[in-house]
Every structure is written in structure tokens, then in C-alpha cells.
Amino acid sequence: MSEPVVVPDALDEASAAFWGRPKLDDVMAGAEPFRADESFEIADLTDEEWDAFMRVIHE
Image 1 (cartoon, one colour):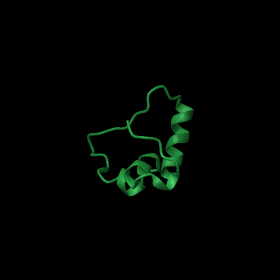
Image 2 (spheres, helix red, strand yellow; image 1 turned 120 degrees about the vertical axis):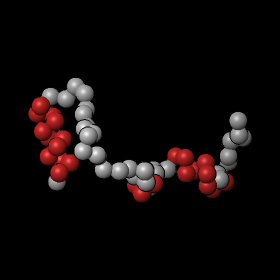
Image 3 (cartoon, rainbow, N blue to C red; image 1 turned 45 degrees about the vertical axis):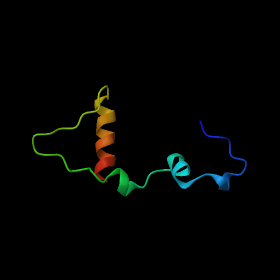
């Protein structure tokens, strides 16, 4: 376990990056569109919730 740091500036960049938000480009780097034989489901959604979700996705 590492020693506590007295001042936040003393944190190394790798440790600080762990707590930061990832860049969208990094998160989506391996993403690909669905193939024709694939589908997307979210379990336990009502039809109304699903319709609202699809509206937001297509906006």
C-alpha cells in the first residue's frame, strides 16, 4: 500500500487518471455497429420505458 500524500499535487499522473472520467474516444475505441444478426435488449423494461429509451437514442 502506498504512503499517504500530503499535497494533492504530489500524486502521480497514473494514480490521478484512475479517478478521472475516461475520454469518450477511449471508451468507444473498440465499439462497432450491430451486425444484422445482433439485437439489443434491456431486461425488465416496460414497453413505455423502452419506447422512451429508443426515442432518446434516435434523437
